[in-house]
Length: 408
Image 1 (tube, helix red, strand yellow):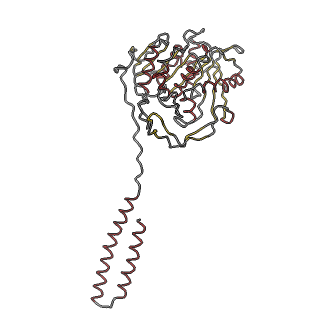
Image 2 (cartoon, rainbow, N blue to C red):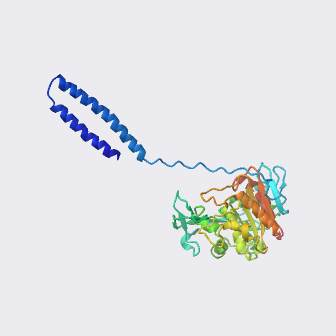
Image 3 (tube, rainbow, N blue to C red):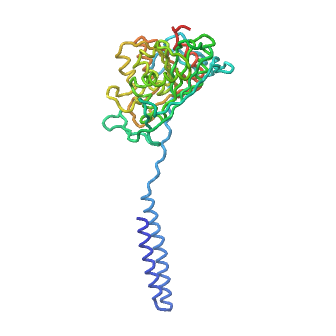
């Protein structure tokens, strides 16, 4: 439209100029020429103004990025939250105590992490390719895309930009120096690896005889995050598939590449993770308690992140505290879990009422207590999502709690 307006003006200007040239000589013609010149100037100003207005009216305004959502700071004593014991600032909950605890705002690294030269054992790393996997051939969501809520179901996200895609993941295995070759060892499987902090914590705890001599298997995710990604598919799906993949595709590689022997006893097997890796840790044990009995989670994503949507668990991992745990017989699972007072609150477009990490973990503590589980729940003040400082303060004691009852 702006170009067309300008074009009409240009043709009109040439006709006015031709008329001026054809006029007779003399004062009258000069006066007419001056009038025509002034009229052309005024027309130019008017038409350029109209053209500019047309361009502005038709040029779409670039969308402004949404302001980042700031999670509110929660009070651990909010009505409806579980009753919990306040610990002195800087202190952890007792490693042999079930129940609910509140940590103060200061989070210093645990002394067990300060072992000189730690980790003192051997770290063996290898990669796994999607082309070699029978269970996870790989997907990805296009960059800068997400999804839209289903108009008929606000708890269901429609993702149209997810597609097959390859990946290569890293796996790191920590073998402590105390491991005796040829012996069968307990182990922990961690998400979002490699996790060097886990290796250091294991070193310190073994040195103080707080946990058994154990192998740590830290598995990288398949890339991306949330719905439509490989990481989201692996960690947020409410099924036994990820545990089955670890059992059939990862553990055999670990044994062959590191020359360790891993126990088959579920009481000697633990899972661990943060955020969706945390919910994945519980998913592994919940759907396969014959494989895992011990679970450790930071800011567990016990919320509605599952994709594709599944009518059997329509609210994803929120179902743990909504239906699965309350309505099932207790399983032989021992669980340590943490949440921060500034943990994630409603981070995406769903607004479904099932995306509050603090409330989700509070509800988990309530239903675990009601069903008689051995669990420890830690509410950390001055802490965000999977808070690094909180993890540094608590991980050695969390591992000690999780491994209570296992021979050292």
